[in-house]
Image 1 (cartoon, helix red, strand yellow):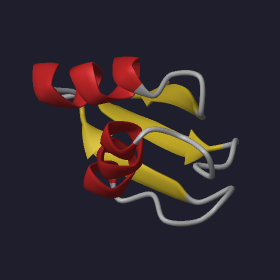
Image 2: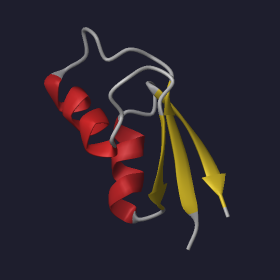
Image 3: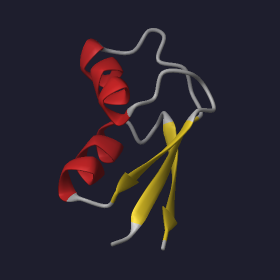
Amino acid sequence: MATLRVKQVKSKIKRPADQKKTLAALGLRKMNQVVEHNDTPQIRGMVRKVAHLIEVEEVK
């Protein structure tokens, strides 16, 4: 199964609460933090919701 490497590149300050909670659910707490997740539809949905705050790289 492929994995996604997710990096937070923009701040969550002045963002709606649902976007802050989505970043927390992804495990992102600080700027430039990188986490890896399995590529599932649930993770893809969260990534899509905060796509303007993160960078995503697909890892085989």
